[in-house]
Length: 173
Image (cartoon, rainbow, N blue to C red; front, side):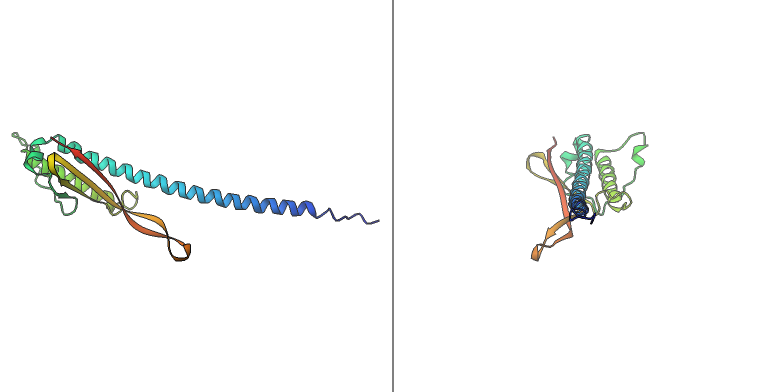
């Protein structure tokens, strides 16, 4: 009498199909996890840009005389050098223009050091501008390098480097 029947290999086939389905599901979960991590990183970079914008806004609000004098009009983070800071320790203190120049230089130095510090991956390739507009409206724009997925010919997704920015407007009187 033959003890083997046609049903003996059927359980093994069921297990192999179940493992294949499980593997496909796990690959989908891994892809979803990667996309989630990329979006979380983008949110972190955006919150850093917001913090940098808030820093210069507070410096401007603390020095209204320099704002009225136009010291903060059309400022860029590139090419800024630190002015003499001897007025900080002098008995007579700093003028509003000197204090504004120090604030702008420190702000630019912070942006440039964040951009250059590759070990922390904070706002790579960052640059910032402040533009003065009518009615004391200032536009602060911070740009940085980001990577994103782009579909090209044949619907093949490739990772490309793009510029991302955060822009805010504030009224400072």
